Amino acid sequence: MLDHTVERGNPADAPQLAPAVGRVIRRTRRRPRTVTADRGYGEAAVENDLHDLGVRTVVIPRKGRPGKGRQAHEHRRAFRRTVKWRTGSEARISTLKRQYGWDRTRLDDLEGARIWAGQGVLAHNLVKIAAIAG
Image 1 (spheres, rainbow, N blue to C red):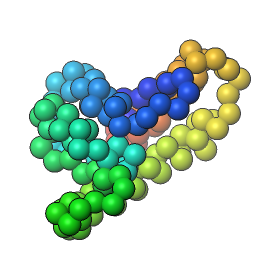
Image 2 (image 1 turned 120 degrees about the vertical axis):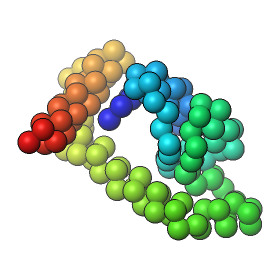
Image 3 (image 1 turned 90 degrees about the vertical axis):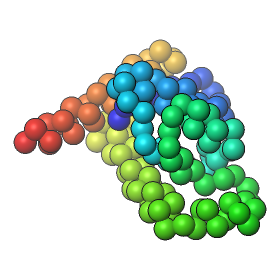
């Protein structure tokens, strides 16, 4: 997991994606070839912002009912395959909740929630690194 944020309330998803990708680019010094997200991020402005950051392929289903051209684009095999990959990666969030205690916390303010989330991400990443290292 390369980036995470905890926000107050329930802010809209779409405006947060390009800044998150920007942070990943700064940290890794590499532009991702592909960015995928769920329909909550599915706005033309988000897609344009990601292309402006140098992302070649953006795979995000559009909100609402897309036009004929967009429907054809979303039904391409590569688009569907990438959406399925993203759906599978959602299991990581479920794993964080179950294995690293993201479903409960004694830290009750925003800063505490940020600490809690950061520790969960760190624990997840350390387990993944250990598995890769053998």
